[in-house]
Length: 201
Image (cartoon, rainbow, N blue to C red; front, side, top):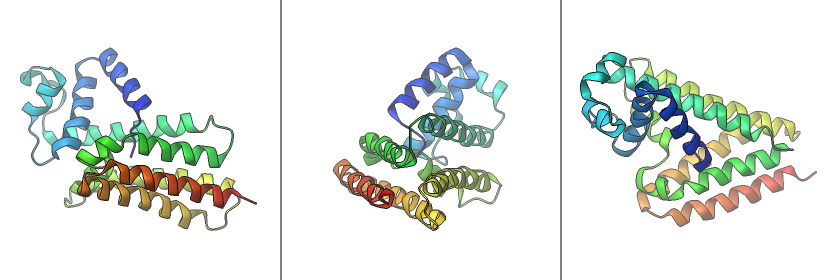
């Protein structure tokens, strides 16, 4: 949900500058996406971050602390993504570029699903507060999309925002389940045409 090719590159550069903690958080985001929270060990994350396992405990005492940091990283990625989209001239262009960014990640979605949607779904099965933190990130995306539809003059902006985010999550699940990146490309085109239709006076 929060990733794009440009965003991923920027994140990698930031983590190289940020040192071991940043590398661990970036690795946690990646490994949780690829194999889920429950199957992931601190050793898996240390290996992906190229950090000695003993050093992990200096920054994160438990895996749950890394999960929390991963959720915060998704929030930061979303904030950076929407800030970049705000530089575009109009709300329809912002929404269509958001959709295009999702479609760019269709190969990854076919293998692992939506980076944040899969994490949020897994955390929803817990009652330790991390589920609520994940919900806040999803709500932030919905709120931003709602703001774009409001700028388009739509009185049903909230319902449209829910519809768009739900459509993305749904096509991510189907793309992953059917291992068919073409499905996301086709649905992305339909969503962009839908936005065009809503933007017409």
